[in-house]
Image (cartoon, rainbow, N blue to C red; front, side, top):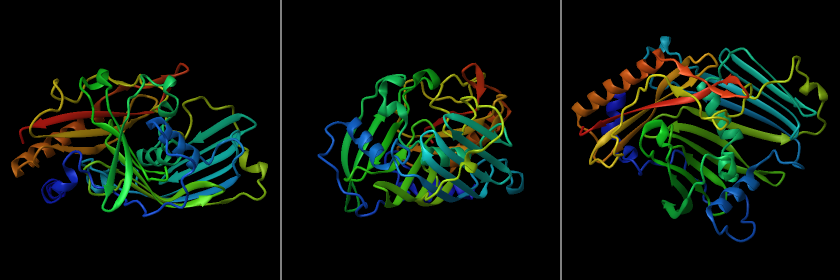
Amino acid sequence: MKCLLSLLLLLPGLLVHGQVALPLTPSPAGPGQVRGAEPKDPVGWFRRAYDETNLRMPGSASFQMKVTFHAYPGIDFAKKEESRIVTGDGTYQETWISPHDWRREVTLGSYHAVEVEADGVRRFQANSDYEPSRVSMLMRALLDPIPRFILEPEIGIQRVQWKLKRLKAGTLPYVRLAHRGSDNSYFGFALADDVYDFLPNGVLFRSEASRSGLVASWQDDEVFAGKVVARRVAVQGEGMRSPMVTAEVSISRLASPSPVIQQLPGKAADVCATLRPRDRFDRSAKFIRRMGSVPRSGLNYPAGVLTVVQAEVDRQGMPREAEVSSIRVYGQPPSREGVDAVWTMAAGLVMGIRQDRVRPAIVDGKPCESPIIALKWKGGT
């Protein structure tokens, strides 16, 4: 209780929706220079950032990436020794030779997974049928910071209209691109904005996902073989005081790659068996029993708190690692009595999603791990 009280009452400036502080302050000047004229439209900003930071394009330099990361506990209302969230120190290593020749390996706690591609054939091995949430968060920040549906709108559900704003963090200017979430089939109302923040030189340094409320940050850029690489990465929930994942990244040239690194026994992996983020493949994962409840007319209320709970669903439809991923305050922060009500509501939502069953997303006719979220609104607190 004291944790949430301190969040809601002592840090109101952090929590009020639309005023979330940047978890990592952007550097005064990125290492790269502005290349060409400033983009004329929002998609141009995304494409330039993609081109500046994508290490895995055809013709790019071979590299060895090593990442040490720490996964922090979340709010799952369990005793520390009984928490089901996989936490602690982890490692991620990637050896990249070409788009069709590479190896990725990640370890966190008892979880271990290896994914390789050699001559266009991809193989995957893991000791679990689901990827821990902290690993999923890290992989999204490292491998998919700008989703394909933005760069290639034709593969998305709809064409998104982005709004561009020029803002400042202190004295540092930056550009914000945002669009209003509109996946109404899932919750019956428009979600908050998806947000992407760029330095003036075009490098992405922060993003905020409307569905989960997760905020990713990239900092301490360096230039490697003409590409910009963030040496520090962090993910945390909107309105949450502590991070969920922090990572330190190092990268070096791969002088003489050995074919041994790509050897992995077994048949070719199916689409679902991968370390890449899965939630862009398919949106068929749905609650059998709807957990969340929100005002059907939207969030135009004078005051209230929207609690978001997320979980990873394994291939059998079992929710794993359910936790609070976001607490969004609209209007004035709630009273102490209101905090108690929000806390009780959040606990009930987490416990409920743990006991639910979900129809997994289906890709190529096979069940696939995917993240799910549930929301609940407490108005007039």
